[in-house]
Image (cartoon, rainbow, N blue to C red; front, side):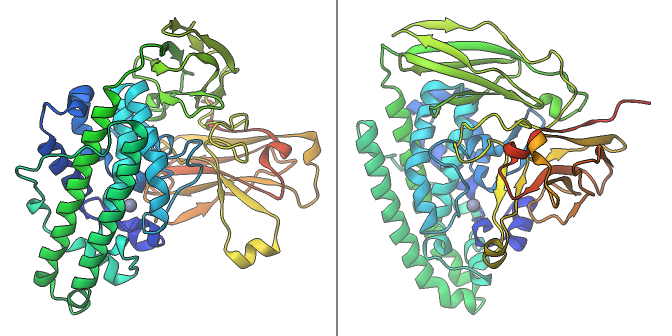
Length: 462
Ligand SMILES: [Zn+2]
């Protein structure tokens, strides 16, 4: 396990957060086996090298990734209309991810920029490579799980001479071939888990490592086949498809990190979405001709849905979508609860926290959690809520901030005083202990029935 973030999550969260150490090495071994002339490597160009680090994507759920060259929310590559929630990475639940993420990655390579496509492929690679971890395949949890998957020498994960295999010549047969290959991988790694289990429990690491390495190598072969197949399939383009391009002018935000967050562009009622490039532009290639409605989401702003008509083989360039006017520095995405692209039953960029079974049965009150937002040290932020007139309820809804020191999923959190009907706002000041904040809504009704909007923004200088 190389990433502290993952390690801490694995210790403090439930079984779904267990992390198979060598995601990066497995993906890299697959890329090395494919070589520079493989169709996918050629299509992705310099972004192909991002696939290995992006193979961790699904372990970053609900997190903001902040790197030297990019800032983005991992959930923008994990939640979409065909996958409306987070999945466990253990069998059997992880098996539900194969089809939707395979299709979504294929779609991304055909329609989105190479950088966006690499991130979508990263999500698919995470579920694929986690499956090959012996305890993930054999559904083993607890201390045996962590030891078993951790006991492998990453430096030995290479596939000299391996020729990546094609799962199928068209989308449907390739998807079926992928599902069969994954069932084979599960059987392969389950058998290794059973074979080394007694040695794991007896702390005989030297006996375990070669067995787990067999799984890592087989996982790398499956990964090479998968990436090779994606590249071959995307080379088959449809001449009748259209291209849609545009540009987004994002709200000006006085925040070192959040000002670097790209805007998100979605086509309502479809699985098409993308994040803008650093210059604000976006492109969808290979869209089927038809009528679309485009929405742009940035912190504090959601655009009006814009009708877009695409004729066959057309290239349409939209007027710039300007979200910079009349903004107040709000850092919350979809704070007006208007976007329901992922699911009609929920709100994009908000997640309904599941309560423990007994508690859930006793109370209709639910918590809706916003995305984690980094706070700048020494800067004061105001949380405000604009209630609907209908929200006048005696033990009514609350909006509060949950804060923590580190981005890790396992970090200890603190809840602020709530904003309720009658209170104007709550203030928090960023510090090493209060470095991340999440807006939380506690209500027995749907948030959009009690709230017009919520906002977290930097206090104006006095
Ligand atoms: Zn995982």
